[in-house]
Amino acid sequence: MVGHALALLNWNGLLAKFHPARAEHRERFPNVTIAKLARALESEDENVMKDFDPVDQAIRDCFDGFLGHLERFNRLIETRRLRHEEIFHHLCEWIELIGRNDGTHQPPGSQVIDKLWKYIDAKGYRHTQQLFEKFGYTIKPR
Image (cartoon, rainbow, N blue to C red; front, side, top):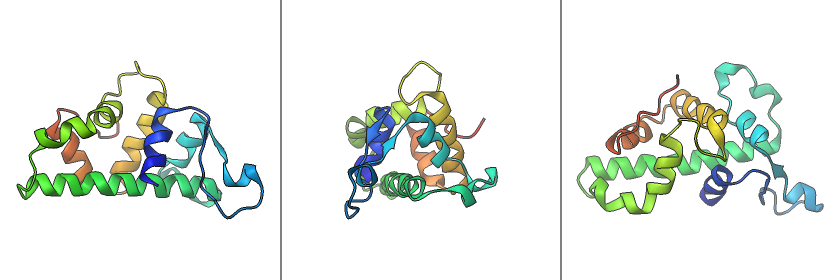
């Protein structure tokens, strides 16, 4: 699922295999557009949870897994088992894509990155925010 989160950040119109047991192709591989991705990342305080469909929840699950991994990287750095310089070359594409929200990159665009920053903050992914700070990025809602 972590791979889905990374792919969703890189492509518009991804056919993601979220429901492999479903019979119909369109149910197994729903088309996730930028708008769908942004909607799925809306935080609970935006009062949309009641309208989430199974694909929205699958998208959120993917990002929860991805962000959980980033949380662990930060903890490893804090306990001095890793140095942030040692992992940067593995994460630099994602750190820059998520951290550099200046409207110059497509996809996913500022709309999705803004929602992701709010999602990270609302869900309490503080170690993820701290990890990005180690690389010079502040990822807090505007």
